[in-house]
Amino acid sequence: MNQDLSIVSLILHASWVVQGVVALLVGVSIASWAAIFRKIISIKRVQALNEEFDREFWSGTSLNDLFASATQNAKHSGSMERIFASGMREYQKLRERRITDAGTLLDGARRAMRAGYQRELDAIEANLSFLATVGSVSPYVGLFGTVWGIMHAFTGLAALEQVTLATVAPGIAEALVATAIGLFAAIPAVVAYNRFAHDIDRIANKLETFIEEFSNILQRNLGAQSPSGH
Image 1 (cartoon, rainbow, N blue to C red):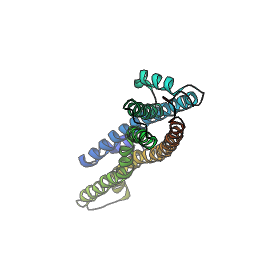
Image 2 (cartoon, helix red, strand yellow):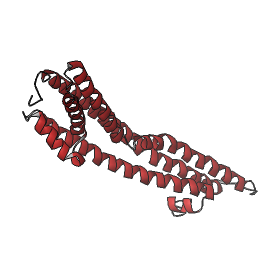
Image 3 (spheres, rainbow, N blue to C red):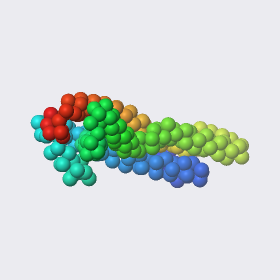
Image 4 (tube, rainbow, N blue to C red):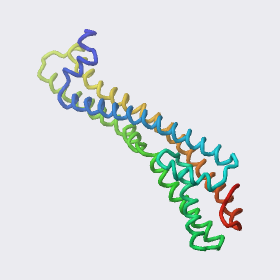
């Protein structure tokens, strides 16, 4: 009995609809775990690069040197460094046009940094919507498979003159496997989504704080010919 009611045996003897639901959920679960591991690596990388640039930014290195380094290492820089480069680039372009109005210079740099901030946040949030969808939809897909499986099981039992627990149990068990796999796919996705959302909120707060701090530095340097230090 234990061998007949193993999960593999139940799936193999289930109806084609239940098998299709199970196959879909297993595929979604694999894709979800792949997205989770990729997101863990990407978030850790973003955090490490931001912390490295933040230390360098406040180490006393001149803004021009930081900008030159950010321009050279654009492909390997972090989100904070790219936001800094966006603001610095716009700031220097406006000064090259001989614009001296402090408000215009500062607003241009802030707009460039805000645009860069939004681009970086969109990149960091990639695949979060997929995890949210998996977490919310998978249980219902599994439930659909369960309902269909139970309907199929009772339809088959209708032809029997005598129904016992032994005849009912396999069909019900086959159907419940779909719900179990749906939950197996959904629970990790929900946990990961909540964790990533928390981490991304912290990254976003740090980036917004950096934008404000860098704007203050630019404002203090507006009287100089070019920003040379902070």
